[in-house]
Image (cartoon, rainbow, N blue to C red; front, side, top):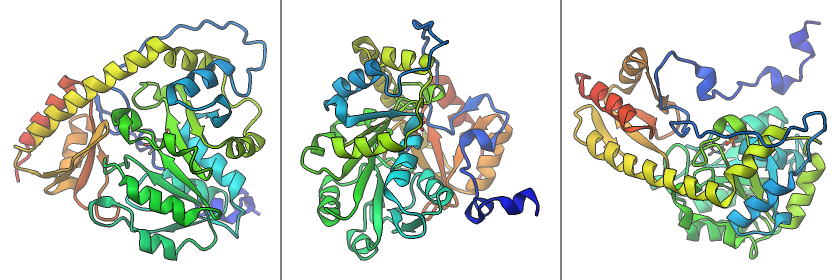
Length: 353
Ligand SMILES: *Cc1c(COP(=O)(O)O)cnc(C)c1O
């Protein structure tokens, strides 16, 4: 038997997540991973690297609970929100029996995590304006344990209608968890569902420090839920999911000063988004710029694959969304610095259509 043959069948068949980093490119303008464009400096205050870290570092949990307005018992910290996506599948889905459901076009990790664990995933395509098709979801709920809803949605940028989320929560009560992926919620904080946790014990909210907190390289995310859900996830999480330096920096980022600085970054990005949108709307090869509540915008472009490649060759790396359902001709552009916006604008203006 070859090594390949020894692997689980679903792993042999798995296409790994095509992360922005994995896709490569030799650019100097990186607008493909929804990162914050500049680095925020931090120093380490903990020098106890001879000791194992706390599983759930108290300062990080307490600071996040205060920031999110929940009890510390309702917070789990993990190696990015991606690990939260995975822990939920591990804790709630029986391989070969249970399923997860999500609504494309959306974030790619839900399917990859399900496939890795041999858990079925079902999709219900989003309808007009990329909102939830509730009747179609209702029809497919049999055996579903987790419904992932990204809001605001990556890569389309819009918030899911709150009334639809309520209907979904009513429909799933006693049957499945609804996981609201709020990776970009800092750019539209009024849209959070965190205040619904009281009312819906089967609601789960995912958060991250990778976007508005400018700490994608730190790998730190949060799951907010009822105490019962958190207690179950605590059973399946690794004993030491966060290293001491990560916990140290995360606690600093979530201090009152850290939160103020994050909100200033959000203001900066929203101003820059406005500028970029206004400029793109005047460019001939740009057919449509979709509204966004996030730090990226989705743009429909004439001959998008050729334009994507042309910008790539000029060192401007965007994210091609062409193959997602309903997104033909669409590229996703992360909001960067003014200089980066200008590079994109000038390059797109120079494209002949
Ligand atoms: C970036 C992103 C994540 C992953 O966040 P990490 O904390 O970096 O793992 C999760 N969900 C969505 C929708 C994202 O865009």
